[in-house]
Length: 426
Ligand code: AMP
Image (cartoon, rainbow, N blue to C red; front, top):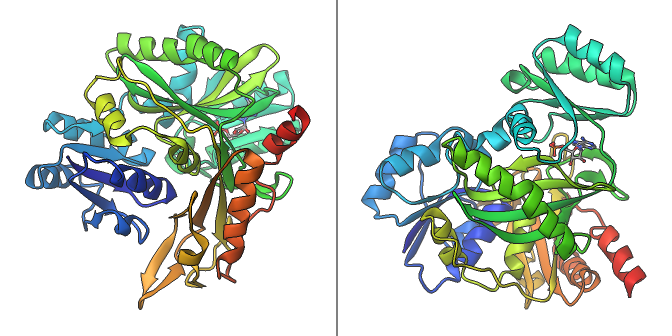
């Protein structure tokens, strides 16, 4: 099969690495790609916002499957254009991608199908939103409706903070994404990520993970795209997986199919494990980054077979087998992240740092004059397998310590929650 991968981050490097391991792969292309992806794929200079150009490329190169990594092209309808041109694609239509593209859309769907989630109201103006906040009080959560690169959510612990978040949103802090907002009740519990591959009707459970969003150790400081992750999330017991499938994933799949907008691709549920059971915090319509990296390290089966089956509506007879080991990834970021990361610092020693059960995925690197430099905020994902999360963590940090990159930093406590649990249970 000829496969075309869209995206340029650590998630897409992990996808490229795993797709390249498939005996069914003839040729892998990627756009925009990155220096890590280039080890597995031919990088193509193509504007991925130009959907017709992407479709033309697929026809010329006889592409059998397009794999879309990030959410933005999906929300913009890339999968629709490709499907209309008869090209198989892993990723949802624009209509189904509203699960991520509009918080209000997802909350209304939950409401119609009695899917457990925080109680909510939608607003398109500040006075009404503020009146509701004064009635409800804090803690409370304010969310810009649209895609805001992970920055549109304020968990307000005081009423003042909540009122400020409403003003910021309607004053344009998130651009068009903030023209509407959702206010929802604050949920208490532990968070976990749950993934399913979907083909429109069937949802195949595809692993669990937990991540660390804050930049600082002890989960402190500003939010980031994610500073590390591990899989599996032991907190997601088989009972919780069953409850999540029954009360959240399956009604979502049914609801979208009944509405004429079936979901295919990867459905990523952000869950709050509350005393009353799992509740949906949010949906994403693509793999998490860096959760994808740890999931794929653990996947035993052929990823290409699974993604093609999802694209073709053929998931029902499939299963996914996983290694017994845990996987953990440490994100190395450029100094200054998540503010303004310093670009251009030299990175060396990656070959020496990788090894058996250790993969270093490129998230934001560039090749300049034959050397590797930092070219983004999150730059490397140092990912390792181990018999336990604790062992995976040890191996990941041993690899981190062999990387020669004075311009980078990472958190030193990735996995602390799972390791505390392992120590307690063990
Ligand atoms: P979201 O982008 O919707 O996943 O929200 C980002 C983060 O905000 C989540 O990962 C949670 O940590 C937090 N959050 C979102 N909604 C709630 C809620 N209703 N209650 C408590 N925390 C929340």
